[in-house]
Image (cartoon, rainbow, N blue to C red; front, side, top):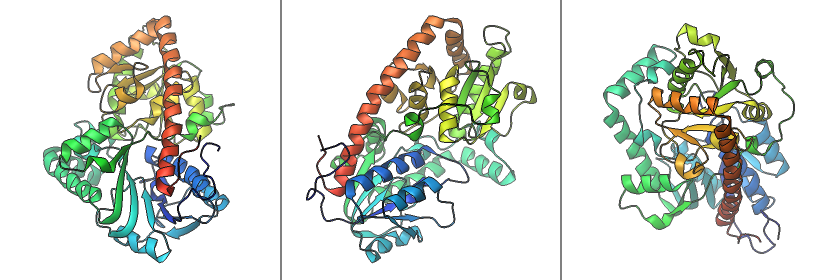
Length: 407
């Protein structure tokens, strides 16, 4: 049997409602959960077969064209997602006995009685790291600034509130409830926060490969990328999200560039937006790329001197693997899941240490042999992780549809 397929008679007689809200942009921004959801949705259609899956989405947010195309090709009916509290009724009204949600944090008030439910909890960021002192640099107005100030002054209150929501998600009323997590870190974070949680309900399965890792980049398609000289820029992604910590990385990189050493003339390319509040002098070094297509992002990874990924919290971590797939060295925070997923293939730093980031960047800039070594380590690590990603995605699809994994 081919990978990702089930023999006739192996799949249980199930009908699945797939929550596609996870594939939709949040406040206009893309996110790793969307890539996870898209990959799983496509593969699950192949496993379940025609007519066994229905998709629901938030009608107040755009549904990406590629998701619609996959649904159409797989004969998946698309339903408007009601208030989250009513998603269980939607499933039952359309004859579904299983629900899959890969970003279930808003389902805390849902009644899923009578359904077999599969939820992916990527991480506990809102509990583990609810606010950062540099968060104000990412705010876009008075309302956002005030919200940040409240969080900063009452982090424990905010974290407790998020913990309460997560507690309710982990204990939703359902016929059966399986919690899928992408790393051992997330698994033990749940057990640390909720010591009495039933460990048999947690399955550690790596995130599926992203389209960015799989696509073959060819030509430079956009003006912003065309303005960047290959191997003469440092890439930072998701720069508009405070949790990704781009501001500190920029401060470190600008310090290296302006020291007139080996980093002189380098550019700082930021994909996915940038911190709103940066010193003016930094901007002559920065190229803001905005949101990029899959192909363009793959090209950016391929042509970058290195990826700086200074994240403050991570449940798995796609961007470093996407860079490693292209043979691009990775500088990365040594926190939460990153060391587990990346092993010895990244150059690590403490995410709040500007000085340590500068030192690590200089290591790559001034030692070509070291850079080549980490490029090779990255390719090897990506291949190893990708093999497990494919195996674990098959296992998850089989778990949901009630089939055995193919040979």
